[in-house]
Each structure stands twice: as C-alpha cells, then as structure tokens.
Image (cartoon, rainbow, N blue to C red; front, side):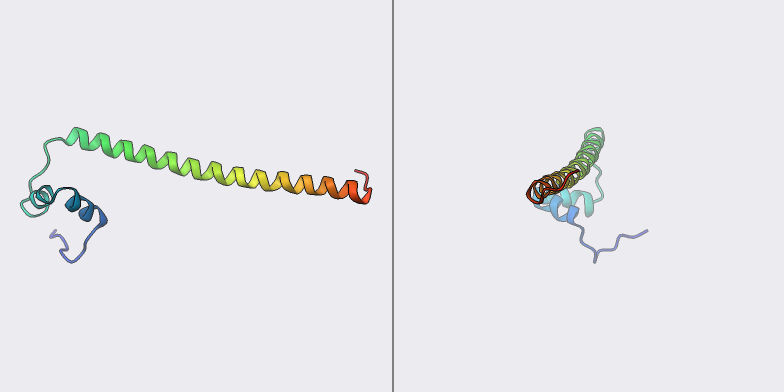
Length: 87
C-alpha cells in the first residue's frame, strides 16, 4: 500500500528536526536502521514511561479527592463545635 504523502505526522516532524538526512534515508530512500534492538528498547522504555505517567495522574487525582474529603470533615467538625452539635 502506498504511503499517503499529504499526511504529516508529528513523529515525522520530530525525526526530520532531529536529523534531516536520517529522515530522508528512511522516508525517501526506504533504508531501514541497523539498530533495531535499540529502537525496540526505546519503544519499551517509552511505553513504561507512559504507564508511569498515567499512574501518577491517577494517584494525584486520588490525592486531591482525599484532600477535599479531609477538608470537608474538618469543616463539619468545626461546624459541630460552633453550633454545639453532638455526634
């Protein structure tokens, strides 16, 4: 299947910005890199990093939720002392 030349991907722009010659060799001349093992290791490392980022975002959301619940409990406690409510 022929490549759609009208579509420009962000990865292509990044590859071109990093090394125009490497981009030209890969996309125009069809030369494949010889360091396939290193490229695969990079893909695995990026996937692991992506999972760590997702985990960090989730933990931050849980932390914000727990902080909000804690503040709500403190507010309720203060209100109960203020109005003399017994719990």
